[in-house]
Amino acid sequence: MALVRPGDRSLFLGDAKATETPRSAETLRRLRQYTAFLGQYVAAGGLGVFALAVPTVERYGWLRVLQDVCTEVVNGPAEARLDVIDAGCAVVWEAFLP
Image (tube, rainbow, N blue to C red; front, top):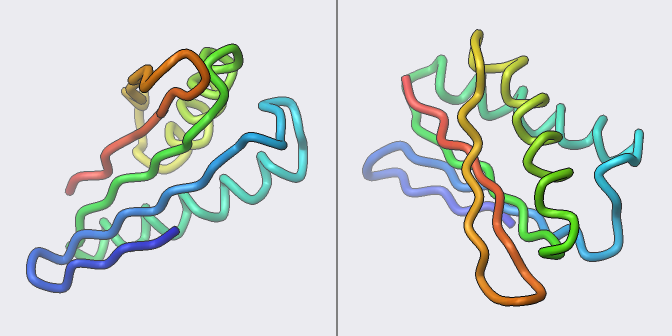
């Protein structure tokens, strides 16, 4: 899912991971593409958020994956965040700011 707000040049990218695992090489490749795009968008003056809706039981694995792929873009340690929505769903996310 993508949401662009031209007024403040912000971009939200979201993805659900109910059928994938944090250990999938194909998923990791795709997430790296998303975060690389967000990094370029922020470098051009935009703001961005990348979020993954994940099964609660795998939330820490997905949090580590998101930190890893975002660290490659933000030129330093990523501070990915984790919010548990309910017993079955959590959201891991990272904000990209200039």
